[in-house]
Length: 226
Image 1 (cartoon, rainbow, N blue to C red):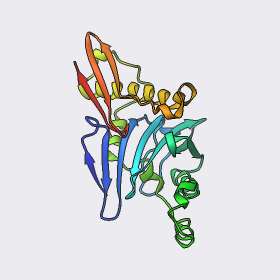
Image 2: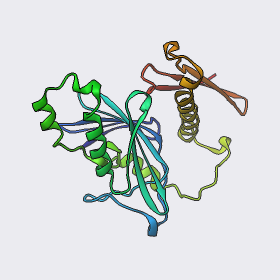
Image 3: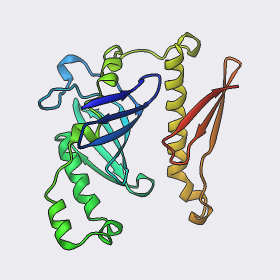
Image 4: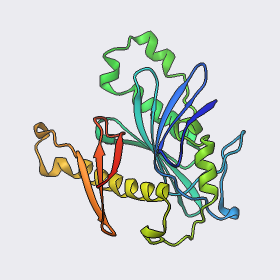
């Protein structure tokens, strides 16, 4: 498959061939554990990161999921969040493909999808599979290259010592964390009809002001230095 993007300058990456297209937004690129603890995908082998989060869009309808991997007791835990506000979740201790298959089954069972699917189509689709490494973005070589330069025990460096792309990733990472909090807590504070949306965040770091503007689909973010 062909990869298009300018990572790490931009967190958005496209991976495609003649049959499939995936769009990714790298939320947290993660790090690789120590060699003796590192797990790999099956052929072709790709290292599996820790503390990794990615938003993936796929299919003609541009379905969106949020995939994450975290090592727990030296073993990767694969999670996929989907549905409205990513309120539904499946996970697997086995493989990314096992998690993807669980998601596929849950997704096909959602009532809103059943309205537009007849019985024969449903039976046919339930036998299908989704590639876990593709859904989780584990075949993105540009991210893999950047991740290989990082160590799990790296200390947080002062912002002023970072390059422009590293500054951008740090700002977007913090912005995404704030957005996640708003998405989780808004229903506890506001009525659903209020339709609250986070449109902008502003930071001041070392006398520089950074505006982060969120796009309509929350996958688009723009960082401006004021």
